[in-house]
Image (cartoon, rainbow, N blue to C red; front, side, top):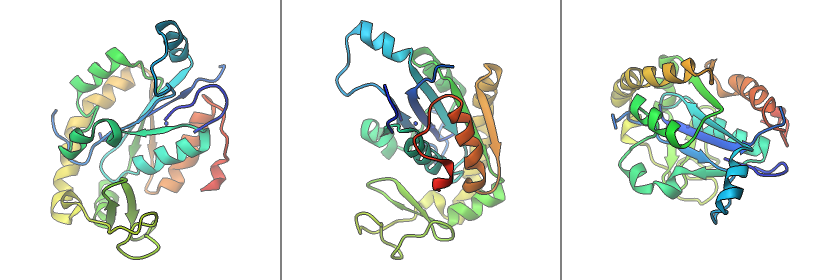
Length: 234
């Protein structure tokens, strides 16, 4: 996600966020990125690009499958006027292959070489909560919209709210696959989290519900970039 100039509309599965700064594969099933960038579609001249980069806030949202990364990124985008550039637009083949970035320590170090991060958020949700959440999750494949039958159900059962197209349950979200996914995430994500912790950019939020974690995420971003919408909007 990103914003330039004034207030406009921020990823293991890693989700990334980019926006205006304020004045102040080891395969892990279910982990895929969301990118947020304030750069225009047409690349600017090198001198302008350098100046723009110095005004960007770049963030990555980390968390296991079902932890609410996508929901958090959508709220950040709407609350801070950032543009959400989904990885599906740029890395469609990688998404089809179920590749996320940065999932491993090597990938995280590679990302650092091309993009210095200002914030890394990790969402810590109890695994028992995640197992229940994932088993109740349905997805609209074309857009990536996620529904949960308990707390975020579609208006019409089995149908996407926007397009009216059918929803599907991923094979990896079925109960028999969830436990293995979460164990694998824990093993691979730990060194990535330790890397960002050692660099002083890591912020960890724990809870069982996105609505309870969100106010803390909102406050963190509010200290970096001016919001255009209050946190109570959700």
